[in-house]
Length: 179
Image 1 (cartoon, rainbow, N blue to C red):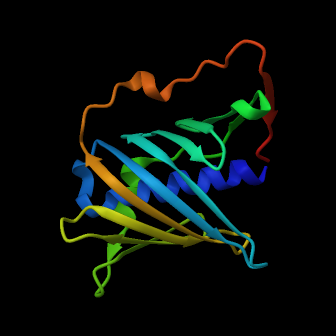
Image 2 (cartoon, rainbow, N blue to C red; image 1 turned 180 degrees about the vertical axis):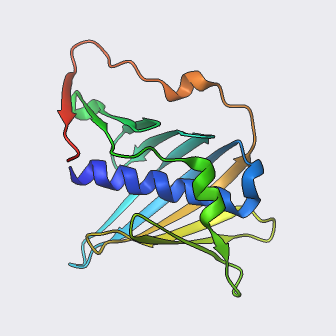
């Protein structure tokens, strides 16, 4: 359940990236590095690629420390972990409404953007070209996430097929309840 919750939070964080460009954003693609600082001092580090398309599609391809793919469309989430030969499937209570998230962020006097979604405050920092470079948030369990983006492409063409996932034969499929 912890990985599902983190994925949900990450998708919202990813969507936060877009609010620097208003409602005109249709897609985003970027490399990412994520550092999670836990209250107990155990840091985690991830690296990969993210793709998102308005209004409700996201795909995370983790490369480090282990390969993992996360697919989100509306409120459906599939997490494929090849090393475990497992797919976790879940339906979130709400879907990530990309456009609503875009509208909710407010520019601050320091040039950053802030919004709060489901009780979690997100801060986005943009570079001199108004592209996202870092998103910081603290999840409901007290872990601080710092998501650093690079090679950001805005409004490029992304085929919808990259957001659909068919589990490989022989993998275990686990359905996770989100009550």
